[in-house]
Image 1 (tube, protein in one colour):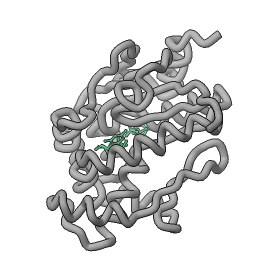
Image 2: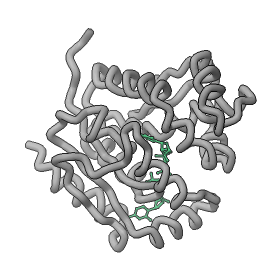
Image 3: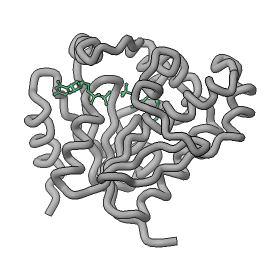
Image 4: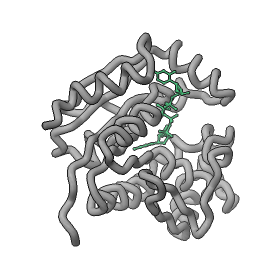
Length: 213
Ligand code: CDP
Ligand code: CDP
């Protein structure tokens, strides 16, 4: 196995701005961007396609065991391919996926598989990886950890402005309270609240906070 490259970890609650910030930080630093939420969303989309009830953990486990997930790199970022199909953004961000994803993501067997895939991605080159447990569980030894926050009102209004209906408070509740890898501020992470700053200002603050040499 090739040596692992360095990983900048970015975690935070739903609609806090993580993906936009992580993508721009990766572009500026010439790193590959990995959106791990899309891996959980793609797995959830495929579980729903199989007809399994997301409330039924045993059925989700059985369905997930048959699903093949890959993360090829295109244009500076990983894509998610699921059993040979590349789900569209509309599929990944659909209402049924928004409603079911935190349930699917709370299942240990699903997390174990995706965490192993995420760790393996560090062999391809320096990464900016974004999600919920990247600094706490996936790469706990990274010296470059960021936690992106924003108030609940700002997050709800940003998601609404994207034209998406999304139960973000409910997803946050499940993500923070689950037993397996709950959303926390990782040890050693720098917290950046971007409720009242622009995307560009948030990216500047992240890059300054990282103190990369
Ligand atoms: O973009 P948004 O913040 O709304 O969500 P996302 O990052 O696409 O993640 C969707 C869901 O996947 C989250 O609500 C979590 O339940 C789960 N997830 C996780 O458990 N661990 C991660 N590293 C990333 C996402
Ligand atoms: O990945 P996550 O769900 O945390 O958030 P996102 O999808 O990156 O951001 C949600 C929306 O907020 C996007 O339309 C961003 O452009 C916007 N945003 C903003 O207007 N100002 C910021 N400081 C951060 C994000």
